Length: 502
Image 1 (cartoon, rainbow, N blue to C red):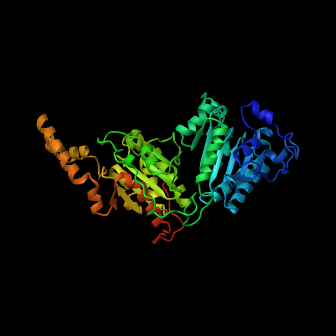
Image 2: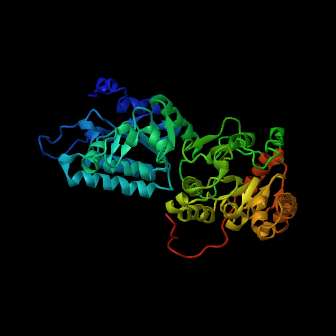
């Protein structure tokens, strides 16, 4: 019944093999195996295609129930007809009703042309249930072959997209269409291969070298995600949670992790690993907009989301892509009530005409909107720089973070001392001799540093709750999560919904 060899010749696993490799052993139960195509058209006979080219059912991953569907490229190229589309839509509906994740393995030639508008109806049903599921259950897409035309929009709605080297291809219009319209020659891989979507477009969230590695990463992700939305619920892998007063440990490795020079870089991943449980950090969109790091982790067993500026890339500055990356991740965490930990070291928004033309105002506004709208637990630790509008955007007290902490190395101001001195005293220094100007400028820089570039000023105004020692950060955050575990928003404006600056 299954043409395994045809797939193996293409260097790929069969749809059924993929399901069995991903799920717990012997846990898969197929639903709808007798559904076939219904229409006679263009040399296609009714009932010709077994299971209409997509295998659907349920199983478990690490004991967690999931619904799954896997398109079979060996059955008329995995093309989507009406029955094929309705099977997938029903699978997503089943996942919604049973409050569990849904996983789609995409390997399709696109809409089945022979079925005309009925194929498009199948896509429409899928998109509708993708949207219904969004924010209620996790939706994961694995691009394990072709995914072109209208087919790309289902993964585009889902939460996480996995791409695989030399296998994944995603694009709205393929190379042949582009050639006919623009006369441009481009390969499918250069147009929409795994590397393109992992590093440039930002469409993909996880970039894997092979199918086996991909399935293992999906299992890792499922193990840390809440299986569905549940109000006021902490997702933990430890059962009962220890009191924050028990077994307190300080991590001395964080004490001097921030370099002495404010313009010296360091790796924010070292800070993250010093705070979260060992080997628990799972980074999302690792290769895209690397000036911001986002991902999931655990603190004493509790699942959290992390957003952190990365000084190692572009000095951790915010730009269009990093704003989008962080904003969508914030909204995911908020939808599932995952506590959000923000680690701030940001010199500002990236200046320049390229960013202005690209719409940095609109993209930066998404980040502000996402943090302001989020009602889950929000904790911010300012490690070093927090300048200007970027200070506000990175989960500041003004956007209603529950707790904002600062390490002693924190610098909170409108801008850096050098720039401030040049703006404030530029006219006075204009006619000074070089030596006099240098001495005067340094004097004003030192004065600005003393008056504004320390966390004490922000703490005095209540914009920073406490100045904490780096080594105490993990324990402080865990205590806060315990304290805030029953948090409920007090104020709410009655409206249908806001208008996020998309």
